[in-house]
Image 1 (cartoon, rainbow, N blue to C red):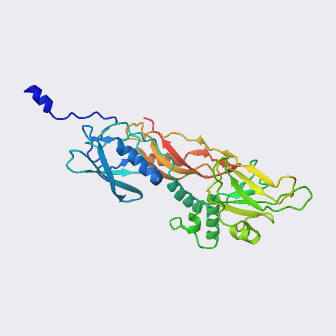
Image 2 (image 1 turned 30 degrees about the vertical axis):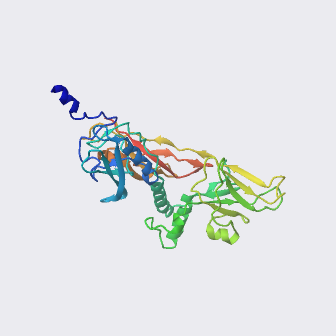
Image 3 (image 1 turned 180 degrees about the horizontal axis):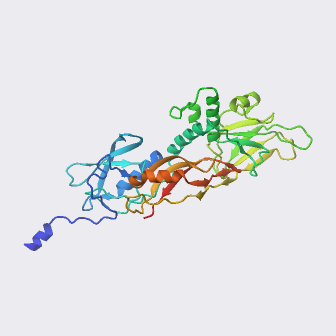
Length: 374
């Protein structure tokens, strides 16, 4: 009789390759979604990777489908994807909520599930869509109060051959002009012009000894590999340049060309073409882009706030490092929510050497980790 019971007994629970939640509300309620992170651009792949790791309690293969999305009450930025997940023998599908806008280092399976393999989700990089929104907001805020010098085209920082205005500087100039005109810009209602990611290269006339300066005839961005970006609109000279970049002091005969890039890339070169024989055998001036990465200067780690238990899980924040090396537009994107405010306060006091292009500081999106000591 005992042998028969063993033969037909209940299936044994499968071992799990990841932690399993004790709280039945984890993943099954909007208040406790699975925080897979990655933002809108990478959400689909990260959600699939999480769901593909799940199994039923005795190792059953799961099937899943996304049924809808829903917003979190009081949080305009976060959208949850809602999935129905089932396996053989389950009476009705489980409804799971997945959050691509926050990331938890301690990912686990919902109660009633196990993991067939470890959940292989690395901490996400900066969300490019959030970075774009933050950049626009910062440019309007800071541009209304200050002018930002253009980036020199020459790697040595002289600007002898021209200047470049990245997307941040273009938006900041627009904000400055709007404020002076009494029509300040609203980052929540961006104009189509502000929504266009672009930079403008201004090439100066070529000077050769005592000869008259010779104006450029073409400007291009040349990548180290791959296709070169096409220009955004026609080259601007004379009055057209003045309308494109009002108030910018440039030599007569300069040419401005826009490209659909926020910034030049580290392996790009700027090529300015002049008329044949303008200044020697070559009619091209090729200017490599020199990029210097930012680095921490003063980033003290905060102490654990009173009443909080020690944890090795960092608080994750996305921010912009501005041209002064300060963290701006700081957004909580994961980690212990109870430590969120302490982490935000700490980062506001951090200082960094900003990233630079040809010696000029540029605004850079970053992901920050704030770790709390015991």
